[in-house]
Amino acid sequence: MALDSSVFKTRAKTAFFYAVIMLTGLLWNDWSFFVLFSIVHFGCWYEFQKLSVLIDPTYKQKRLLDRMVFPLFGWSFMLVATMGKLEIMGVHLHIVGLWMVRICLFLLPAQLLLDKNYSYKHFLRSLTGLIYVSVAFALLISLRSGWIWGFKHEGTAFPNSLAIFNGQIIVILVIVSIWITDTMAYIVGSFIGKTPLTSWSPKKTWEGTVGGILLSIGIAALVVYFAHLQSVEFIILVAIAAISGTIGDLVESKFKRMANVKDSGSFMPGHGGFLDRFDSILFAAPVVWLICYFLYR
Image 1 (cartoon, rainbow, N blue to C red):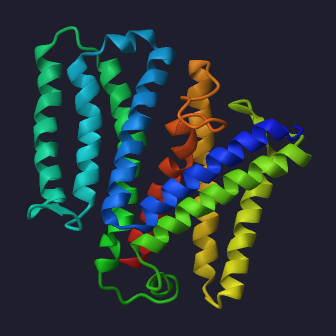
Image 2: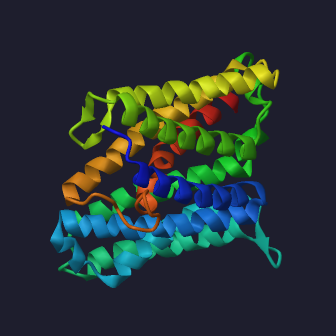
């Protein structure tokens, strides 16, 4: 797969503005991070529902209540995940989120019981979106809140090494490692990629995928060496984020193939839509959260 210079320039320009927006959201404060990923969350839901209609046209017959309640239900998880870090006029967002969860838990079963034409198949597809999109972003918000680091522990080795991190560092680590992996995979695959990785994503190659992951790990190793971090855990987390992020990319490619579309949307020229850009995070965030939770707490 030869490198297309025009495509690469478009991707590079988009990536630059994406990096500026992402870094602003990541580094400014807790509010900027939450607002950024709230927008991304609803953007991903919009594209997930659009792909669902292309995969199964009957999905379009869903009730408006269902289309609205599931994304709001998922957003309420994100509110709960702030864990007291954010508040408006003395009211903590996680309390608002808990009330929204209760309301949505009432509305969803009510629709199933009262609407005889409501399809359980549609319900299960929306439930898939809830897990795929909303739970993933809620766990990302949870990582950023630093809630996991509130546990006391008496572990050694890996658990103690995780103590050098905090929520903000972990989230930056996940997102930047995915960004580097994706960029390096595209470049390596463009120059030496010959072996298709999977029919789900014909343009991805084994050479590009493995090269992207290895280069991401290599850059992490250089950071550890020159920053004198003396922490192999930093490299391990980068490797985990890179590998799980690659799997997330492939899963979203499968969805697009089922829907017979190239991109999930056109929000980012050269990169596609929200799902195209954040598909890796949807898998990497839960995996990193689980590792940090079970090994650190």
